[in-house]
Length: 550
Image (cartoon, rainbow, N blue to C red):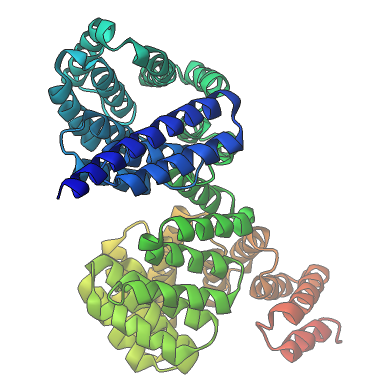
């Protein structure tokens, strides 16, 4: 037993000798920055642990030295400090180091708790933990809304720590450097916030730019400049500022997200760059990959890259199989790829989940349109349109689509009622008035048709279809070619590719015995029809040739 006790004392003495060697080597490394001094310090700390693994100083000093060189991350450094506290729960330095690393990791509340424990253990010699606690409070104040009690706490620990420096003077030099940086950061940030609040945005931008150049933290200050420029709708300036913030810290998830959102919304031509930003976020935020894949899917759709868009939306769904928005977007991607059955399946799933009646009504509309345009199944389309109307009775667009199907099925009365329902829920919907006018015309209700089409043009004078259709009523319903021609010519002015308007203008000119102008319009209709294929080419040729028959 006596031999064992003697051996334990010998081990502790050797451990302390190795600690002293490690401290000397560490100090040399800090002065000369020579890697051999760093290696010696590491070796001595490890040797000390071999002699006595229960000395807490080994773990927090070794953690600091390795973290300083980037050999371990801050979380591993915190674990080493916790190990030190396991062996010596009453070691104030272990609490101080753990608080330091917690602050680096932005765990401000944990850091403050550790510094308070160190203060309790050191009494009048607590200058260092008090000053570090005030520093941590200051750092936290720079990242969130400032409360008066936080300012009081900062002042209390800062002043009391400064007074107690006479008991702990060796810490002063290190702490002053840290305070200088953090206090400057806090001062710039708070002054800039004040300037922003009084709408002196240009001065705030200049201040943040100066701060980034003088004290660093460009990822924060340039990001604030970007926020100001974005609020002022200076999108290019915002982009350049966020880019500077990104260059200052390529691992800042907030700034990458800002860049991705900005380029996605305001710079669609930068789609490849935006994709790169979202891919960077995938590496930094794997827990949020569902949303990121969802955004990537839309970006690939913009590029008409159907394979990658489908793949991205499917990956999003793997993260959240019950997300209706993911199902809807995947359905649209399948639709663009002409994989119609898959599209129908995911549209149907999105509808069944129904997160919101208005949104789900839009999906019903999309599925109904697929049934019409791809399968020509008007009855399934009607069912979906009616389901959409039940979900959102104020969606005038679904009424219009339902009316169009009823027109195809020659249910003119049903179409008229449906178009009128659309007008009831959206009195300013010029398309609904135009559609109703055409339905009235099919029913030979000329006066009602004219009223509807005039109203459509009143609501939107640049709606070429209403101009043309009203011209047809004047021409074919009332026989007023002179009133019809200006409407056809207005439709052509609005839409120079409007084949039917050229054809109708030619007919009006023919009735008005202006054969030269009629021939000109027929020829334009003929040329345009080669592109649009809207009319029977032979009919246009026949009318054109008949102009010059005796």
